[in-house]
Image (cartoon, rainbow, N blue to C red; front, side, top):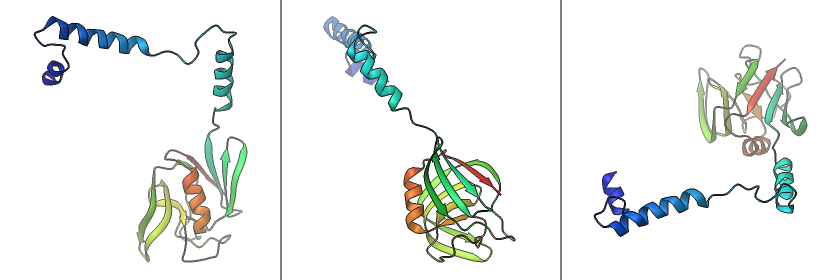
Length: 174
């Protein structure tokens, strides 16, 4: 740290270097300005305020309705996507509750007692080993056939994967 400070001119022996370093720090501190500059009635302030109001994003969240075998993606109260899914079979149910997407993988190997599937596309884990993901190995969407995950057709999983981020709320209900 001291080496960096000396090279920056703050602790060097010359007075000129010291003054230059202090001047640079002062200029940096005071050069930042708020986006709302000018009088409250100025055009700039009004335009900025309107832009900030219009760009407020609604929270994104996913609803999984197991009784309908349907996933709905919402932005606030606006429906963005509605897809048929394959949730967990009776013997391997999809967990119910409120979760958050905690990790995302473009492709991921999934293993269990009686399955080992390489390159599972667009995997979004939301609870322990449970994920929303694409399924290239079946086309029985609308029917519970999974080991508890939420299966989507690959293209729909891709759309959802690109739309979500880590932390997106996932609500699973019957």
